[in-house]
Length: 605
Image (spheres, rainbow, N blue to C red):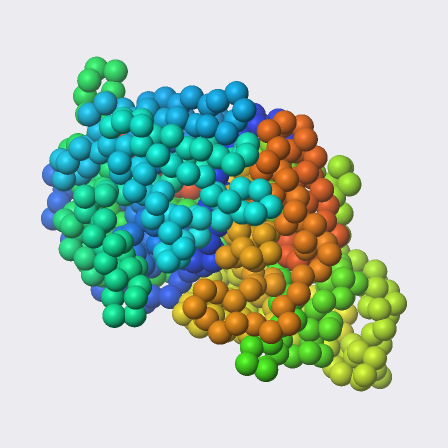
């Protein structure tokens, strides 16, 4: 249960949290958009907006940038509109972590674990009033599994060493069957995938453009009139003003009712105010223009002092589910005869000893105290602390306490030397120097990058820190693949298989050694290390394993490998903190769901 924040002992508390499960949603755009600052502050006056619609019960929050799509299958960003406008067969109880019914009222699993039958709730409707049936579910998964439609969600459904996909068939109007080639432990959680309307979108899937691509790829962009976006969630799009706000109105056909038969949600309107920086969002919250705001470390002390006077509460969910990391580009491939990474630097980056030395050279404790204001702990795993599959250091997971002398020893043993000026050079006399990138405008990541530059300078390494505009960074990560080092993060959850697209060799987010994206120029000479292949194999085996103890052992080995070989050098696990106006009643805050996971039962005074 959420609580007001107190610094001492938070890590000890979470060790005893109940085990939870959830499907991770991973995406580079999710990573970037969650904390991205790329737009100037808009000129709109939030107070004028509040006065104009003061008679409408509503909840106002902020986002750092406009939505990138209204199509849930194509979405690669977080936050996105779909937690308000769409639902899947199942969802996750953000307190227990259990998978619970959503559009489906029940399900049955066969004894061999290879057949899963869902029964939909009776009388389900889309936001335009049309019936929602099992045919919509089958259509959704047909679209998801269509190789001509790029989506990050597909990797999470691949089963076994061959990466087979389940087959989905309609039994009748309310029942749908998933048939699996073998038992697949994450399958039930995966059915939280948003269901989309066949009667609206089938023609877009079946019709192609002049290049032979399905029109679906350009359907439901942000230029689509909101009234044409048909969903099944608690809200539907009412209005979108680019650069200013997104307005959601209550879906009159939503299925939820309270115990007295009253329709839910109770809040008539939800407003996303587009505010292009965390600083400005903080100011808007203090002035009363927002009902909730994520608490950045820089703002915590001031907000804590203002809780009573400002009539709000700061909720703490414990360790956040995401990661913060530093990574080198380990890709040794070329494209059109040109190496993605300079061969001299690539040789450094692909040395395990070099990566370990860099990890020892980063002062995480100072990072916690100075950048995160004490609201976090050094991170040691790609798997979230609240996950039942998280393995702490006591289980043989390697850690890297700040030790510059150890870093120098590793570098010297690996053939590096120090010149007369104390600069690190390789065995050919090349100065060890590389460029570090992150997304500009993110104060936390810019501060992390600046500290890494200073820390590594102390062991003779020159880091050229270069924050990039959002579009330029996305291009390097997903298109050109030409980068040297980066500071970023990934969103997480309690079901590790949601991160399969990070660890499978052909995964869409295997960023430290990314293969060519579909439709882009191929790579020559791409190769994977033995440890990299082993991690991919373990993720496949863990998804096949239904015994929970055995699954834990498999995922423990992946964590031991990631900390030994450091494809990602993990940094800080920060606390999940949000300030919410006391006029918002019914908040059950957790790191897993945040403040609005149960928005259908919230009320606004």
